[in-house]
Image (cartoon, rainbow, N blue to C red; front, side, top):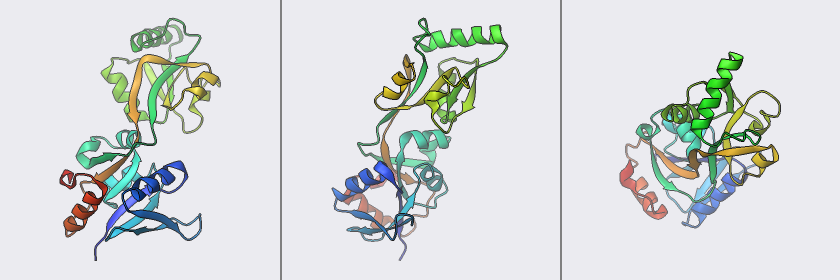
Length: 235
């Protein structure tokens, strides 16, 4: 029998909270084998197979149609997939994994509070130094799209896959765009969020792949969707 492949984060708090979310809806997800094995099982839902993946892999696997459903951050989907809503359907925000993708500048930039101020600083920086202002981030697409909409042009993206908040102190960037939940790490690194620097408010979301092979799976999906309390008509 064909199965619905459900991709969920393979470790950490996202995995635990995902398991809890499904459990409250009568579906038990669990690891099988050792902690190093990416194998899992589903109880309480017929015809559903658990696939354990990193949260960052799930958008790609959904877009390729290799999994039917997936749980990951809405920030990752929007950053990794152009025209994401043509490829995926957001079935349900899950109420955890909250984080805001923001733009932050050094505290000492007393006159920089808005994107308009940042644009002026970026222009002055290029005029003075002959270089574009560097913005460290791993969310390239989201940051570029946001700054383009807001009319900020004189900057360059510096890829940061590690401790982005430390790039200003380490002199590898002048500005950062990163996710934050409490803001404590930003404050510890003497950074402040621009008043209009909110790019995206993210949370864990259950997505469905439009390009996956749903042939013969509609009855199973409709039953599973009803159990989860989501709209099967989105696909």
